[in-house]
Length: 328
Image (cartoon, rainbow, N blue to C red; front, side):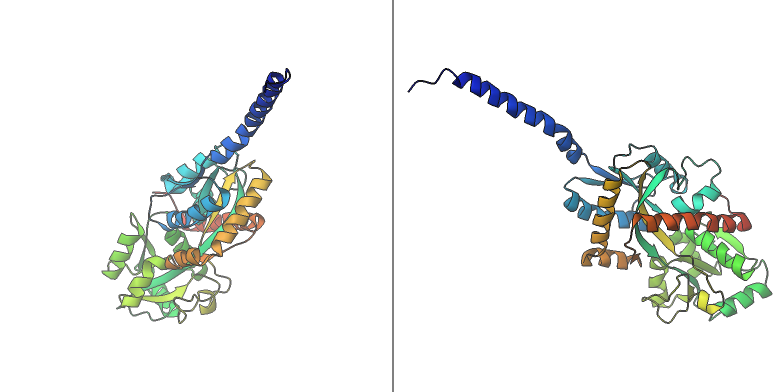
């Protein structure tokens, strides 16, 4: 049977329609194919990095796009944060920020390349990690009250360690010094591990750092926990009181972590990311990964995380000024 005279023309129209459809779908496909990059402004292996890597596969599965964790360390997290602040606001570049990069750095670095409130839009509060005040197991102080009495009786003679100037351990202890009116010497180290090693060796008198780093040494009997920085006691150390219940009401100095995106990121993209991160935090395997880090998941709205950042900046500015905290 021969083809009708209209068949070639009809085929041309169908081909044109198919090409038009393919062309119109390319931007959407290209957008979906772009990877989502989570910038961690520290070296691999720390809590910030571990939290980002716990979320990455869940977001990849939920969003249908590759998720890359990109470590960009330097200047107390400021280099990586500054890079994200300048990135395209399309929702495909995120920062895993924390108390230092978003809460403390504005007071420590006078020429910071970003503004935590203006350069970013909050996406999700991910977790909080309590700090634990510890001393050597052979130290005479059995309680926080005894430790403070000893420090007051020996002004300038007791020392405390941290993972570096401006670190979470440093500012947490400075906050305690401010509240308790103590005069103690700060001994900064290049990292948390050596600061704890010298505490175990008896070279310094105390440190006030994240629970994951000290829990094994508390359990082994080499360190003694005197207090925790959270509003409530923590499950890992139920017998250890909070600083607040030990005589300093309102004391709270946990480390916190959360996701932000460049300012101008579309609201619908922020909402979607927030929803998927909250879903991930509710999963048993993610909760287990956080528990290993001593972290407590903090699902909530972008506004809740933004409000936290806004509260923390002036609070830590006071501590930084009182302690004359300077960067390394």
